[in-house]
Image 1: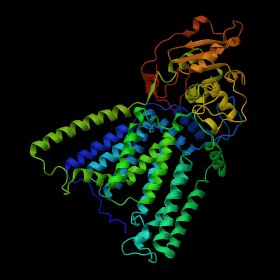
Image 2: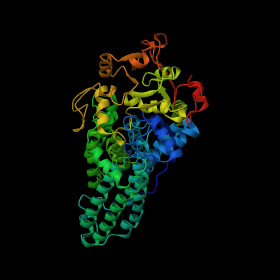
Image 3: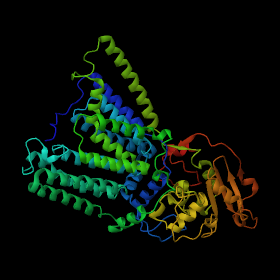
Image 4: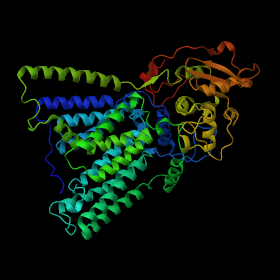
Length: 589
């Protein structure tokens, strides 16, 4: 039978409570990076549009894909982001993101303590989970995906806590293959009906529901196999119940604005490589950012070798599959970290127990002298103050870095009242949409050629045309072109639909080289980060009503230093920015 679950083990001394409070603050700091994500402007803008006009069926703010279908798998998350941005601005978005991260950590902590993991094991597991999620915990729809995954896996794990955990289920003590399952082993299964409800919300929040559905189906299928192996013919009704949950969960994902069309698009999109997006690359094992994943993987390996608790074969299979996906695509790292936190804390405790060779359960701090207690209290107080200050610093301002985003270039464009069709690098395009394309920016002044929505609302031909210009041909690790796209032509994006302006980063050297070869484009603006080019017949011809004199152009290598609060929109004569607070507009001067 399953190991007996001991009562919930709450901290019992002030020292333990202080350490757990410091742990929560440390995790909060790890889960509160305050740099603006490149797509945040778009997510908020699309949410505002949906609140005002409903969910659009075709591409918005683009001149290259007008009328093209838009399958938006992030509608609910964008509505939430927009609502919070309107009410509380950047700090509200940061607080929401941090709260979601702490909810994940709270689920992991409670489960670890319920399974009698010691304080050291709990701290190790929680911190490892938090730092593995740090890089992926930006203000964007993915945080809803990871949070809903944690909730789903916590519910499913709790439902099977009383099941046999032996490697060969039919050898469980007191049972053979003809025994009926005990009532305690099946009474919780009715709570599995929460899984379709969670997936219904998740499907309308972010496309990561596909990973959650696959993992859920894998877990429930293997559990159904276990039921049949463990209880013979009496296990078939249990297995049937689990299969019904699988079917209901799959059907729940079809309740969305696009019905089965969402799944058809996902199958098509996921079948096409995405080497242009860094998150779909394997982790760079030489990067410092990969150290947390390596530590987590190493600890898991040690647990498999040294834990004296029963390691359930179903959990191991699922974790192996998810770990494989982590090393294929780095955006899956939080899924593995969450599973580790939910399932491995008791085994980490077993490993540490063997290393420490301790045999008593005396609460931490009861054997300390008065002087040691005073020193520990002082240390905890200092740690809590430092962590609190650091957390406040991260939560009070959502930063837009000048050396990452074209803040100064956008202000130049606003000052010169530039408008028209804009070729803009994809990681700046949704910032440009908020700044120049929406009614909230003081009028619809521009349209972009391509943005971070990628294949959700752009045909592959437009995707390839953009990356031909920005990245060049590259190789299979950097580019994938559709078989029906026209031949490689890095300058095609500069002629397609007759754009007026082109804005890109000077770090994108291929785009810089292509522009320098164009006779019909003129440089209008340059700083250390960005270059803005305009068509010569419109901006370099004195007879044109768009003519921009040389004296009005700004060509320099001026460093872009510091940051401004999000949304960092440029000033117009009569701006109307729905999601910019008065304080942010003042600071953005």
